[in-house]
Amino acid sequence: MTVPETLELKSIGAHVLLVTLNRPEASNAFNTQMAWDLIELFERLSVSANGMRVVVLTGAGDKAFCAGGDLKERKGMTDEAWQAQHLIYERMIRAVIACPLPVIGAINGAAYGGGCELTAALDFVYVSETARFAQTEVRIGIIPGAGGTQTLARAVGERRAKELILSGQMFTAQEALDWGLANRMCRAEELMDSTLAMAETIAANAPIAVRQAKQAIHKGLQMGLMDGLAFEIEAYNRTVPTDDRREGVLAFNQKRKPRFQGR
Image 1 (cartoon, helix red, strand yellow):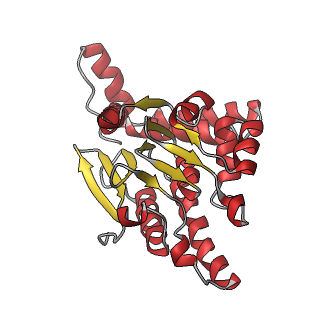
Image 2: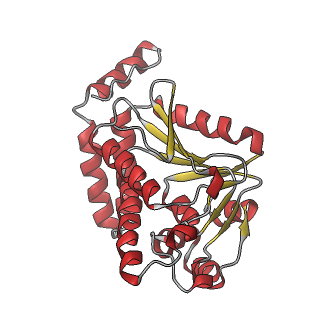
């Protein structure tokens, strides 16, 4: 994979990939290049993870996770150019959501507009006490178009999502935690260590089982209960013939840590 212009990639241990949105001069706002870089990264991970088992996503600097779409780049765009660019953003968010690996957010600052949408699209997130969130699109004449009306509503509930999206008002890290968008709030200096510790915990588990569990939860919640139960069993059955399942049982009986290979 080519080195992305707008992302910083770093391997943490053998199985965790730390991805940093790296446009701090623009509060890590999306431009077209960042969208393409994220598409390439997450579509590649869907095909070949190269040993990676968990992705952690954060923003460069200590002020912003992501300020959303870069309005300076969009200044003067024709309607046609705007819509053409947005097709790239749509593909980007779908690539993130469809990633078979767990994707955890370390939300280190402002997450406005598309940055809030990206937060809601992740599997779960830890947030700094200084993080701030807002879906500000209605204030510039559009609506969330990178999944926000769907993913934020799924995270915080329909009525809260309507309040936040229709008002465009900012909300705090504590509110994100209270309402279900965030899983944990950390002091700024502890955010990355806490997020990476959880990522390493997940990465130490059987990777096929982790991926199947993620898919069973995500897709099952979009089904009725009985269909969800049937999908869960399909996912479960994919773990039974694996070497990892046999290794897990053997390690338990031998009273040692399992050595999972993802096979």
